[in-house]
Image (tube, rainbow, N blue to C red; front, side, top):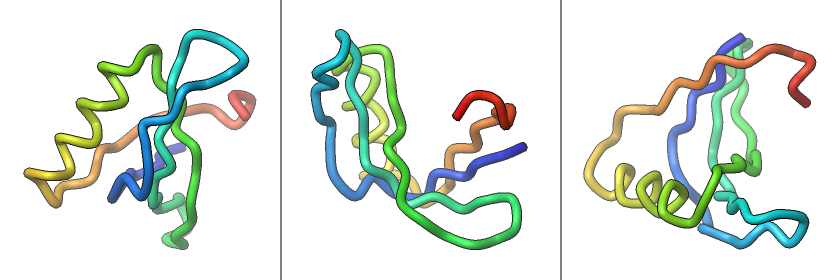
Length: 70
């Protein structure tokens, strides 16, 4: 399954449960519908790079994932 990230709405935020961070993103699901998802990243730098990417590009980031990763 694919998830297309179109925009970072807010973030990065620290994840209180571990050392990771997350961004609240506008995403497109496989069926073409849009929604908001928290995309978890390893660290603040990775989350911030995603924010900076969308400052300069309108191309979505495509994530491949399996249904059991929820």
